Length: 153
Image 1 (spheres, rainbow, N blue to C red):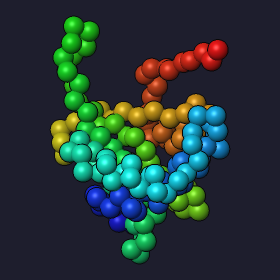
Image 2: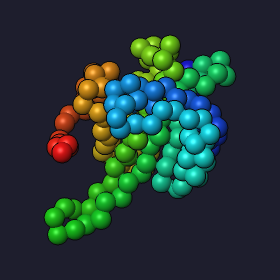
Image 3: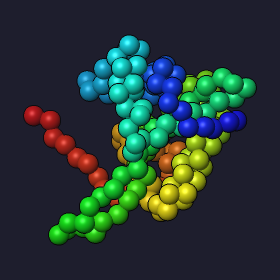
């Protein structure tokens, strides 16, 4: 297993299919079906932003998944103190490679990235009915701090 930073938006766009297909299966009324061309354009526009880091996981030179993280700086306000976090936007592992330790490998790399930058907080969110994500993040010691609710009219 090898994990490295990447700027290869084409590979990220291809690997995004695994997370996008899951989102569409769980919430078809919200998510658009995966489209390689639009994903490629999207990630091309994101991949060089200085606050974003894309981690690619490979086995024998074959890309198996990625993590898209962001270094976030929260300003001091009258309500909250200033702080930094590493925000996990997405983790995507090929469907046939899940439960083999690749996601945990990415998480360990995310922790190291945060520590190297002097950041002690990792933030993320996931969709409530995504039991796989819920179980994975619980295994990694994440705790719920807020809940997002909605009402559809």
